[in-house]
Length: 404
Ligand SMILES: Cc1ncc(COP(=O)(O)O)c(C=O)c1O
Image (cartoon, rainbow, N blue to C red; front, side, top):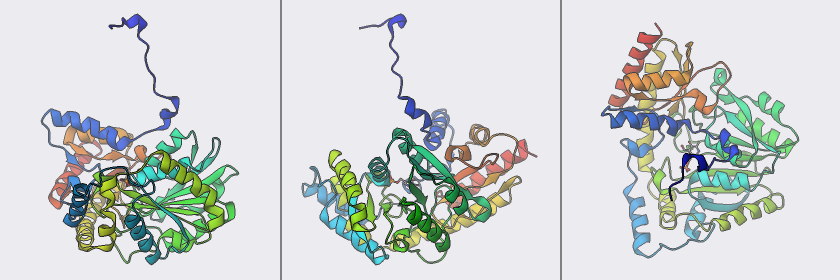
């Protein structure tokens, strides 16, 4: 039936979506338009290693393929298959997480965070989120009509969380704190002292800690770090990880949560999490068979990934620091840099013009939240050296042309 414009009933999206932003994909839409016009885009925007010269380890692909041929194509158990859960638990224990109360598999860290936040917060409560942040955190909280309570990451202190700011922000409605370490978008790796101070605040104020450690195997300088949960056996912690980054399989959507803390204290909360895990049936079944081979099998590819990232990080920091109006704290983990730009324009105008004129795609700092008055870019340094070198040359020319 053809409806005339007079009778058209417009279907509006829910008002709570007003606070959902995802600048990373929004910028990609602008870039797709240019691609359709035949332009070649230099992509510094998306944290997907598979778009660059990184490939999923063949033994993981073989494990998933075998699972499919073996008929593992039905529904999985809601928490995940036992062999994967055991491998995750054993690895977490090896890393020093000693009070594990539950392990569960999800469609990426994204679903794990969604379920764990949904199972925790009530209307009117709030959750401490980093600023700048990985935008998924606020997007989930927006769905829950829960206010993010954004704490400062301190650029002048290597982007470490500002513990005094966290302390000031805690109020009677604060239920949890989200820690992204190694951090997206800054690339910071937090000091043990800072983590211990945060744990102490959580202990005093009965906060649940959400430790998003998806980049923990991509620390570029120094030794691997103990998980936050190892510093906090007496505090409720959910640690998140998965196959998306270090195991180079983001499209498989395999992530997990490891809940730890005193058994009696976390029991009702874990029942809530398990209830939601059952309600969504299960996560991807055949892909779960890659978890044990990933965690217990050869780790050689990670050494190669880190070596590539280290040289791309060095190139990035050297190039950005040599461009007028830019400064950059050297990232020490993950594959992101968050340089500051000192210009009169907004950072959103900067990235849009940079894309239109030089076909370099970065994301504006506003998309992640940032201290008022400051302007940043988020750069993904996954592309190869030649692409990065060309992209930074374009940024240099762009700055010279507009901000001499
Ligand atoms: C900090 C952080 N957490 C979670 C995710 C999402 O991970 P997954 O693919 O496991 O959902 C990302 C992806 O970029 C991320 O940067």
